[in-house]
Image (cartoon, rainbow, N blue to C red; front, top):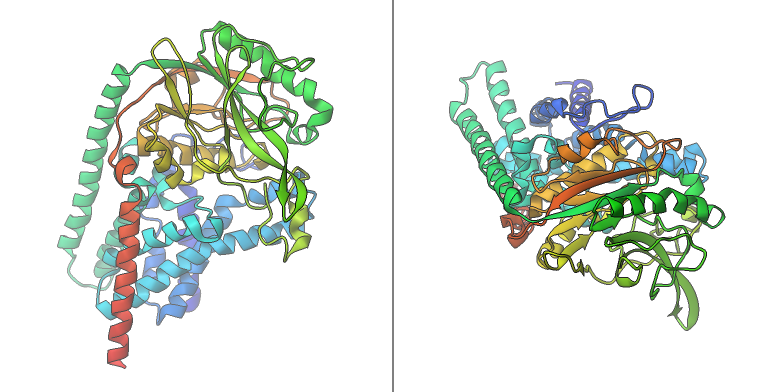
Amino acid sequence: MSWRLSFALCVLSGLLLALALPLALPFVSLHELDPAGHLEWLAWLGLVPALFALQRAPGWKSAFGLGLAAGLAYFYAAIWWVNHAMTAFGGVPLPTALAGLSLLVLYMAFHWGLAFALARVIGARLRLPLWAVLPPIWVATELSRNYLFTGFPWANLGYLQARHPLPSQLAALGGVYLVAALVVLVNGVLHAVAEARLAGRPTPWRVAAAGAAAVALSLGYGALHLREVRARMARAPRLRVGLVQGNVNQSVKNEMRRHGEYILSRYVPLTVEADRRGAELVVWPEASFPWLVPPDLESFDLPGSGMARLAHAHLLLGAVTSGAIQVDGRREIVGGNSLFLASPGLRVLARYQKHHLVPFGEYVPLQEYLPFIRQVVPAMVPQVPGARLRVLSFPSAEGEVRVAPMICFDAIFPEVNVAYAAQRPELLVNPTNDAWYGYSSGPYQFLAIVRLRAIETMRAVARPAYAGVTAIVLPTGELAPGAIDLGPVDPDLAPDPEEPARLLVGDLPRMTGETVYARVGDLFAHACAAFTAGALLLALARGRRAG
């Protein structure tokens, strides 16, 4: 096979897999192109062309190059929209923004190249087929992308099944990594069958049967788990929640001191309306309060702010704090992206500060060595991460309500979800601001990630967006159909600065109990990493003996 054909096959695989992601292309449609997820079926065969090329790679270096090519095609198609925040709101010239995007894509694609190279070395030296070695290796490299350089586990292959309720239920056992392993296994089995047929060899029926059995068992488990969780949801007490989406233009939000009264005029009336409609909790999006507040703020009942006391609903609102700390003997002003829980009378009961900050969005990695990239971050008070994950609670008629907050970027890290599960929350909240992404795939892909978080711990997610996709996600990972049918927020609507503020009111099940994944965390992923490390050491040892 020529290198041109091998390269083309890998690019084809990357593009096929990208089509399985939630996509919104402004030059085609402002809405998600495939909200039902029909194209997710491409995930089960999209990797096959690249596996034909990998099977014929002469060595690990060429295998790495092929994986890198597939990864570049996949991630460029998946996250092309990242440069929008830099150009539209960071004032970064387009060439510089594209260079930054390319570095991020290269970092993500590197892990695909690593997976291909490891599969080539281990498979060849241990005489193991691709379908057997690639799934655990793939999981190991996706696990490393979760942590390397603070991590950016966006568009992991497991999220390609977020809109299909049966295979996505595997996340309750092994997280998003187990879903990814099944996807890669099926691709490997299909490749083995196709390779044998094209070479004129007998069909490897045992391999095909093993793949079919894995799929059947996974779908069977998914069906049983769905039925069990739905039955638990039917018995669970409900919490009426109001989600307010301000739909404020990001450029207006960035000048919050000038537009504070206008911004609150988008939130306060709908908050009062949610309270009137019986909401016990009203949630505002990330950093939606328009002014900086001290971290020890005692009340949001501030003179002249326009905030309104509520009859019985508690308020969970995002705000940026500002305070002074001592750094090397000097006084520095730092901020925190926080979520405040307030009583109906607006008295502050508790605060959570964002745990995972966004690189180049809320802080600049290596800025002491690369000061010129400071311009990528919008002008704001330097942010610091929260010291710990904290469940917030408030009283209700049916007992204490325990809420696990994950502010925006927190929610893309599954280990955050596991850490919260140990504190026994009854539901999750994911206040976010997707206005940075404009009309793009970003908000829809983020929603797919959050759907897996719901499945992993069997908890409903209340997700208010500053602009983007506001939704209620059920513990099964499905979007709450009742609330969507009411029509206060269209979950298919991309961010639009001309949209009026919207309100979504829905009843969330307050769930107890835990999934296998909540108990053991990323045990499966770490086992795959251990297998990969052990197999690589054995392969290298055999190579030295053969040499």
